[in-house]
Image 1: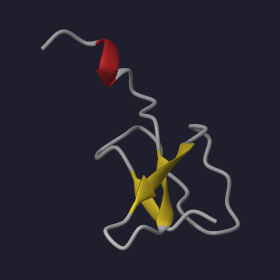
Image 2: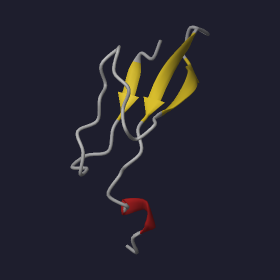
Image 3: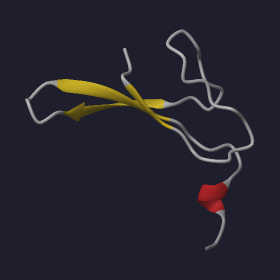
Image 4: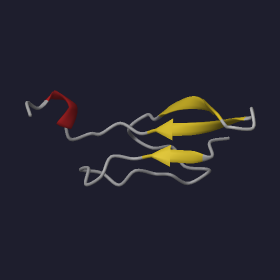
Length: 56
């Protein structure tokens, strides 16, 4: 189960962060170690507007 979501702001689609939903961007679940040694999961959502490929 994913505890947290990182979602691109102002993307061309609304990202689904519900427990039962499946986002169209195909988010990647990544483990994150907490200070107490336990592990939580973060869903990293991908933008669909191409911002990663644009020149700055």
